[in-house]
Length: 202
Image (cartoon, rainbow, N blue to C red; front, side, top):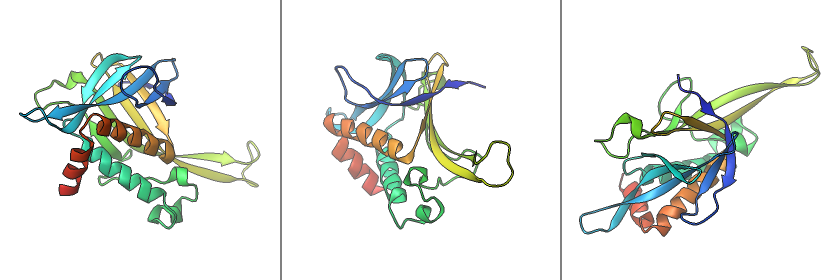
């Protein structure tokens, strides 16, 4: 089983696309950069995703996936809102995420494994799952006088063409910022309006 190194969220600076990056525990940075997909006339209408680790191409995933990310961003915002179904179960907004459609121990919010249908599986992978953890809050070793603190997080994992993986554990606020910056970069690349149109048509 592939092991992914842990990451946190950081701003990805320097020249080129302005996207939210993931700061890995080994000191490297992972950026998810939307690349316009163009029709025969050269007009951008959707995006694929380029994974860059320390500014170097790490993999390519997400065959025309912009509308999926835009839809997820809307669902994350709705889940975080006061009065949402998630608010009744999760008092802390950072624990509130949309419910994935499929079952499973680690339900997925998204999973992108190819840039094009003809690509090999080794071109890269990017996935986001939900995980719930419980931490005892109280005197160490005591069975009374404390409580279990349950938290929910999004785990974003990426693997490059060489099979090396990185991981980020995000609150719902951090996931919302990450998605927002990827979509904003798609907008700057000229594909944003068509991403939203494709999403609305589904």
